Length: 330
Ligand SMILES: Nc1ncnc2c1ncn2[C@@H]1O[C@H](COP(=O)(O)OP(=O)(O)OP(=O)(O)O)[C@@H](O)[C@H]1O
Ligand SMILES: [Mg+2]
Image (cartoon, rainbow, N blue to C red):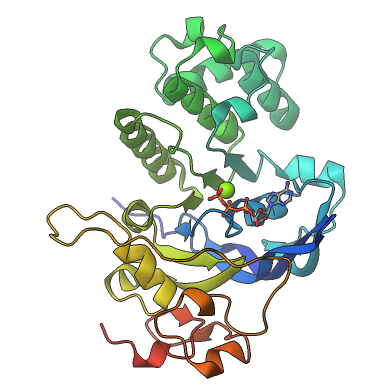
């Protein structure tokens, strides 16, 4: 048997992406000079505390930012074409067909007034040009594929008639039905019961392997991300502060914030209790000149407050935005 060579094309290249909100209190920088690349079939985990810019980054890729918010700098290259500034029709053609997104709350992604079968069928009809009956049949096949036990009957259910786990399965069917190359999963299991979380995660990973999907997996939890991701980007206050291969980051974090995230994880078998990260995320409207983590950093020195440290390649495929990262040992 011959094995097809793995597809390692760079699908997505985000370059210097900057996203601002115009708020009554001033301008808020939600995403600050973010750059990363994602190859076909690979998984990028994105971690960081609440408000660090994970969701806004994803919405910017898909052209789904709210009206008081926009990309003010940078590029989002999809197979080399910049998506920033594409018109609504072009973005609509891209979403679902090439890049899909699922959210923490499946209800927010579903239309409450339409059966789940009709919703999956609708996107098939839109993107694949299928007729009604064919779209319905394929929708039912997708609902079966994501694990709905009685898909023909459940296709007729409205979202509120399904359990949380089943609803998330239905949104996964909707997201994948038109064969996207990239799925962005934004905290896809956080709102679910613990027992259901693992099953949904397994389903996503099975589908990823089967379909050769690239995955941008967003989570608060560095431990979960390190299990599923090839690479991890750690975000803090809108910026990536450390990025590199998952195992390298998890085993030897070099940015003090990545270290703090790791220390905050409950670890079965370890005697020491998890240490919550002291302090709060800085204001994103009044930005200091220096490192945004300076006020919470145990290693801060005067130089840290003078200029923003930029992401610097420090070997092993890892980049870190910390002027003291060279001092970190494993
Ligand atoms: N609709 C909005 N109006 C104003 N500010 C917003 C809005 N949505 C997000 N923000 C701000 O943008 C920044 C980034 O938010 P984002 O939702 O991307 O964070 P996140 O990392 O996804 O957090 P969480 O883990 O809580 O989902 C935050 O400071 C947030 O307050
Ligand atoms: Mg979010």
